[in-house]
Image (cartoon, rainbow, N blue to C red; front, side, top):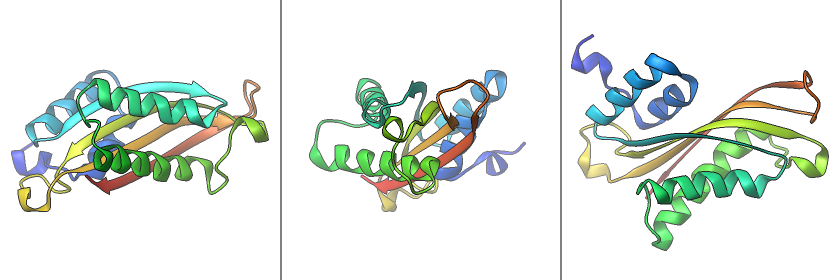
Length: 150
């Protein structure tokens, strides 16, 4: 695969990273870093929306993907909110309506298109996993993506 074929946009990188595991995940991390992205992948499970938001925000700060400036926190918050809205299919609630989520998340920061420094930094958050009633076997897969300028 040539360098040009390996170049992916910010949103695709977030989705690819959250969906891959093992050696494929390592390869996506390498491609992302070579493309100038800063990346992180983690996991969270909860019936409480606030815990999902907190896990992603804490990871982003701990890994240096955002700082404590309002505009950076605000961009991350809205990226999480968009991804969360996607996994909830418009009904943004978990525990209060008896739904539980087990999720992987990825955070990617950089230009929307690698090499386009004039566009500034953006942050993408992808959420992937299962959601359903808090009973084993009652869940289904979900995927959400949010992207905002920093």
